[in-house]
Length: 447
Image 1 (cartoon, rainbow, N blue to C red):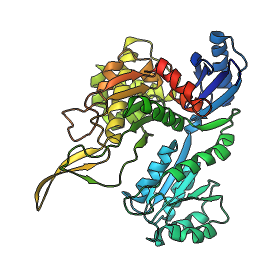
Image 2 (image 1 turned 120 degrees about the horizontal axis):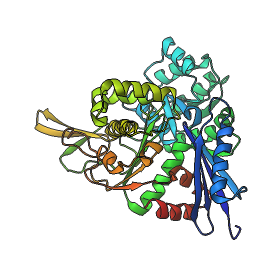
Image 3 (image 1 turned 90 degrees about the horizontal axis):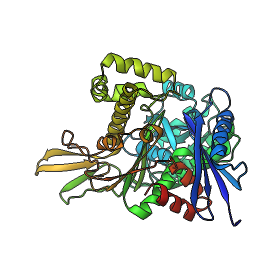
Image 4 (image 1 turned 45 degrees about the horizontal axis):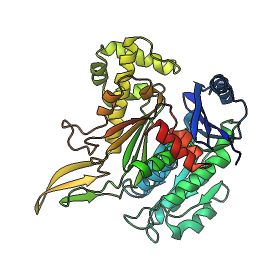
């Protein structure tokens, strides 16, 4: 390594392309800049605009290394097919999201002709085909393979189901680009999602980046880079929650065991992964602003903005047409705050587990589904809408446990950390090249 090594880290986002310059020999952040992602023309134009701004700060025009991640043009879009919604289909979704994908279609049981039309119309980047434990049900996954064999579209298919049917499935799909992987759920209640996660990322690197027209060497999807950085931070700080509100999606990451905190609580469903990511593709600050209204309710958003429902509706219509819009007036800032708060509230409720009271023949019992996050002590917030707000401490309140919704197992009390330079994804990238430098830079700029 040179005595001084400058590294350029690039994040092609759905709304903005971010560039960050760091020095790794004596780890420090040298500068950061962003420009609107030029999806409709050439994404490399947005990159060049961001680099011009960065060079004004740093004076650096050449870097020893350039590494990129991407969620531009919808990022990594996946469809998953499984046997039962709460079992293999859920395991497939966990694997996809953990790899940094946005799940744009989820199917269970036997695929129909209408399902196949939906899948082809969706035109996913990858389809993950699962179903059956090893030695278990073969009928459904074989049926689905036959249905997919003649489907239009050249999307690759990953087969990660019942190992006893793998050879037959690969023969059925021999005329398609197909990859074989270990079963995501080899036995009832047993998750094995890491092999599928890794394969998804490899296919992303091989095929998807080229299709998006990116000139840089892209290492991974942006959400996967954020997940890597989150894991690094958790080694320093312990269990944590990361909230990333973007223009198109709202992503939540948790590093926590999440098992029941009390001996009397019964757990229901598949075990949750220690490192979990969920992506809410219907709620975002610009492209998906209308989804926030649908999820939270127009009245709720208007009340938080201290504005009329008509004003909120008109503002959201404007945002979805003009995604580059930044709030300028106090009214616009209040509207952005209400949208961000509602997105955070909705996404954290969906991510966290829940507890319910049931009555059995033996009497009253408490049943938990999903992860118990009540004891998490650290929340990291990132994303343009959060970083540009002057009301961050108010925003984080919408991620916490609320007596009005006691069944939601969200954190009860947590310290707020701000990714003030929007470096989490960049540090996830940097960790592949200089992990110690990535940790040091996060300590200086986040912790």
